[in-house]
Image (cartoon, rainbow, N blue to C red; front, side, top):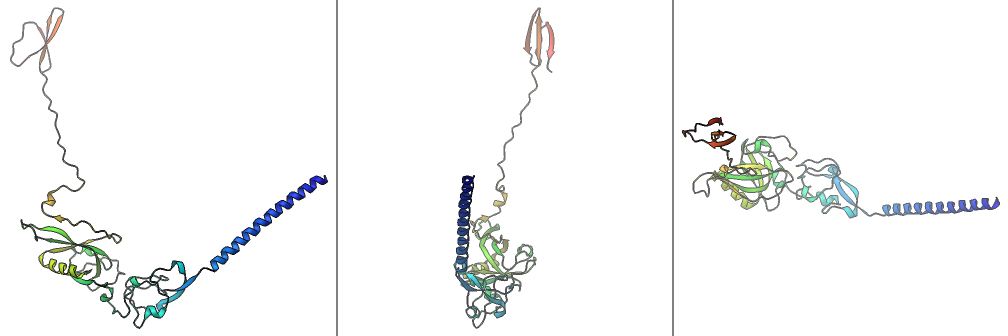
Length: 291
């Protein structure tokens, strides 16, 4: 009995020692992980103190400083309030949500005037074209959207028939009429649309308005693809749409009338014979088949 009790005690001591070692290792690992977390380097970064709409000029009340992991800091982020605001604070070009980091592409240069000029990118120009309810996509073209510009004219056509071609693609809309805020979502039928273009494209648009009709094609907001430019003429309108199967010839089966036949019986012999129209029959017994 004593040996059995000692054996059980020894097993209990071994199990207790193993449990103690495991618990100590777990506690040690947790302490190390917490120490690493507390030792993570952070840096100060400037974020929006409230939701900021386009056209607003920044001030100290709209900016706050927070800690941000240094390894995940976005390129171009600001850390100093004076460096961000300067003598003349920048203007918000794109909507900035609360607690969102300030980045240069959403702000105008320091000292920029308000209104449309602050939204024009470097080396770009703004030009306004006439539109109506049809050419302006029923008012769905709004500031911040992107469009393609079509030109319909007789330019380059020997037969003097109108043709449509893609003049410009993926063009940023800066404003409609006197509205330049990108916070507007409701469709608005307007008489003019202001586009952001290169100087050369601006000249092309100015000339295109004089020689033909301009029409806008509204793009998906994430579609920035440049398609192959093609010319659509009056002959193109006669072509079948893409994906339409070619015309298949249908052959009708011609059913001919059956040729009259007769059965000629001579005793126990029966013979079938085709008979042409008007041909005399023999005096044998006849059983007519067919018509």
